[in-house]
Amino acid sequence: MAAWLVVTAHLKDREAFMSCGYAQAAADALVNYGGTYVVRAPGGTVLEGEGKDGGSVVVSEWPDRAAALAFWNSPEYTAAKVLREGLADISVTLVDA
Image 1: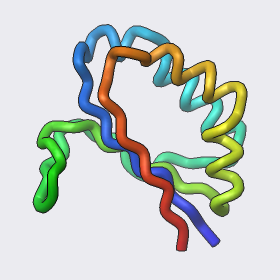
Image 2 (image 1 turned 90 degrees about the vertical axis):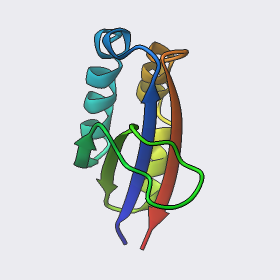
Image 3 (image 1 turned 135 degrees about the vertical axis):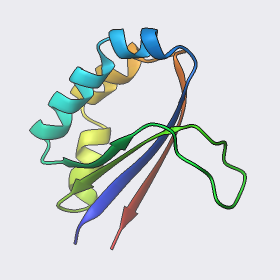
């Protein structure tokens, strides 16, 4: 069954975030572990709940929960996450069908 990682990121410094190398490192790991991007867009609007408007939203699709977790826990993605430390407030949710 398919699975999705839903990420909301509130960037503290967009220029620093975009130049830190995280986006390319994360994308490379995502492809290597079988994921595909469904949505990558800035400026989300919260319609209900305690969220905060303006966040960038990234949704990736995976063959299954195990593949998404293999990516999330991989050495490649672990190293990529270090690149964005302190540059954004991130929320990640794993959903499967």
